[in-house]
Image (cartoon, helix red, strand yellow):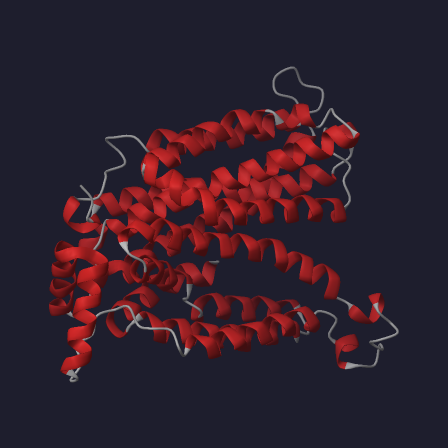
Length: 406
């Protein structure tokens, strides 16, 4: 996350200058190399260095957000960005499961992998290698991605065809914005920092991301903690099942329901509703922990699914605001700024969440918000701050010219 925070703006500017596709290809190849090296790490500092270099050199996420908003017509942008977020969410579910099943294969599957084999000497290489092979396939397939950044070409037929495609997809006003950004040839970072609709949505987005990362850390710790401390006494396998169900439900919601919700309420109202509903939901978690058996399994599964749905709804709504606050030639850099700020907050989230949970465990017998009640109260305070920031005068809606809405 720290490496990503340092370089995301640079990768965004490169994507605005040379196109989204080269950055996506380079990032995919970087993932193949450094993820494999991470699996071959022989000490702590080698592992840290490979992760830092991976974050620094793989600037995929910002250009992918810009790409998703550009490859889709205006009415399908919510679906495009929801697919990006859903892919991230599915990765967060499949990744840990893959690591759990394939790490240390010589110990788990001695009949297949011996201690003297490559995977016995490097116990974490197998899951990293599987991911790297998948990323290599993605890199190959990315060669056929169409470029969405308008770059003038000597072939007039291709240029006219691209002009027609842009006019159809974005309309005359946004087409004019693309041509203006082409004439500048370079994104003005200073103008982006002065773009308050963009910066305000990024700040609000960072607050919610801090909350989501802290929640993700706390949920797993809370689920496996003993019941005498207010936890669920779940095993890691039980936690994995809850997350898997949440991930599958999230996929269905993002693909089929979110675009309709966003079209009806708009991105800002969707984010507000998601934040407002998250507060009573989180407040119910300590009381859910008093249940047992089937009722506990059903309620915690539904609560986890609903929390993830609300969190991603907030995130996509803010993604839409960010991409509509700038013209096409600035989207790469704008998403780079967003990603850099988000990475810093995401780096703080797990450490802060873990420290908060540890401190709350020592407060089991106090009168005011004992134990886990304090944990979820603090999470709700952060969520409430983010909710308040979605209102004027702090959060400014994008200008009509940039977002192409009436």
